[in-house]
Image (cartoon, rainbow, N blue to C red; front, side):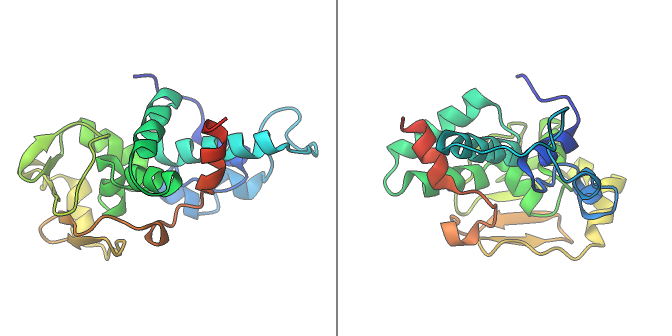
Length: 206
């Protein structure tokens, strides 16, 4: 599957806010957005009037970049959200949050969603005791995510055991066991990703 391979910091500058794509770097003084708080490119500092369509497009692009998805993948997920009962925008964010790679990130087992995706693909995690390598796997309430036994001795995960981790209300984590659980499906109020999902719904509804 195609992946964005250019500088991640350009994406944050384009959206005008931190997308936390580079883990700890995003919290320090090396963050590119702190140094150059304007869009990349020759005309990045020019003032531009944004149309309604432009606002909707930017919101969709921002959501895609937060969760590290490509257009086709994101559109398919939107179609899945639209078929479910309830608000399409809420359903979309819940589907995004309950992806395996995002859950690994939320549990503090990775410093960014990009790193979480890589760890999943490399086979470091199990779900309900079974090894999985699909970052897009949709998790349900009751699912248990754990670091594979052979991986627990790696420096990466030994370091995590010494950390204090705060997880969303819909999850629990046992740092000593390197294990987390989805205790309930998240509600819109429990998702802190700064995305105006109604603009995405408007964009795809045209």
